[in-house]
Length: 114
Length: 115
Image 1 (spheres, each protein chain N blue to C red):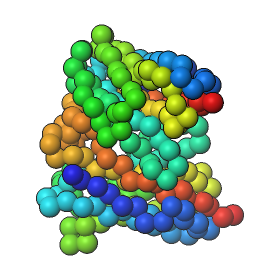
Image 2 (cartoon, helix red, strand yellow; image 1 turned 45 degrees about the horizontal axis):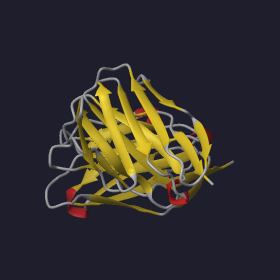
Image 3 (cartoon, one colour; image 1 turned 30 degrees about the horizontal axis):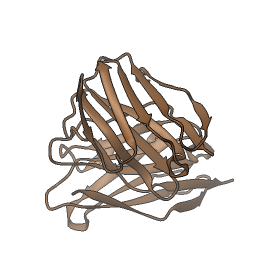
């Protein structure tokens, strides 16, 4: 298994509060990704990073920000959580970031916004 | 942009029967395609990938997929289903802009195995 740890695994928070999810990798891979998984939508890309301090937006980036100050850590922040952000969040990593390079996933964080 | 369509949100087969999960892609050029499996409360695990080296791709757990350009398809099959195959399966395609911005996933197919 790829060395990817997501924390926390479960979180319940209230609408309007800030939330930060952490992804930690031990593979020293350059590329890291945050996806959200929702029934009927599959996985959708939120943000990704192609190096320290190099990030870009994905398909569903509104309401989310990310930071990557070290190769091994990629943080996802919900500045002011909303009920629509209730989801399962997955972090993924890629060794080369090329088009034939598969992603390796963490076990996810289940976030509930009440 | 690349996209994939998975036909059937739920597929039910009997144990020992053929498993066929359908995936069609939209692309003007041959894409890179992937199948992933997700067991309950876990992340996605790579089953196999197509990278143009061979049209028939063998993966883990006895699964294989065949790339058919004429049909723009990349269906996943397994000759004989096991109870342990019950899971969610995702087809994914790589964006040809370089892949650094990740994969685009289908909506998933939930495979149910009947005893």
